[in-house]
Length: 189
Image 1: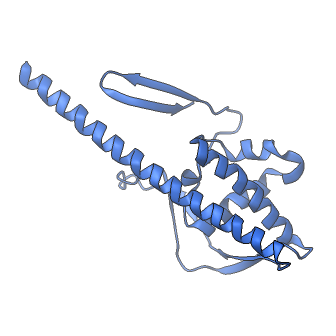
Image 2: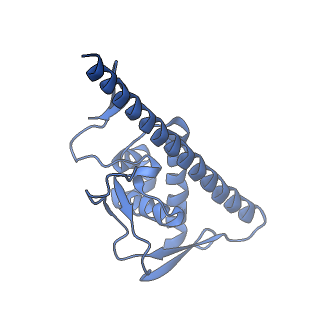
Image 3: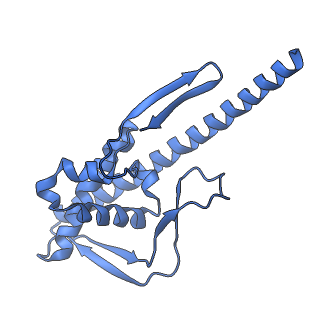
């Protein structure tokens, strides 16, 4: 019996260590992403303050993000991103009156929400972001495109931005579960 209990405790200890490593890696990724977001926003503010029109070039891809392959269970992210050959690019500029100005404004507004999510280690859905500023975004597709633009710009997935998928008609909330042999878990329901 003692051998069985020791093996169970050793397995739980290994699981805890893996969980801690994943958590540490996730925190490092979030910190790096926050630095990139702040750098972009700082650059945009500096350009506008200097009277210049900041421009952001975004590649366009056929299919950018997709669900992770089941075989790649070691991946910490539930979706993978493809950096294949772009099929074109868009240049978004802030001070010109056109479609791209609005798109850059939306991108900056969504970046503000993402920055808050990363700082507070919270999650929300694209639909939640849309409902935060419905008069500004006009329709959810605009938020969807901004999230995709951010993923392309920073070469990350929605998962890294703390933006999670939610089935229409369901609410997202987090419940914490813990037991003696498992660490604190957040389950999205």
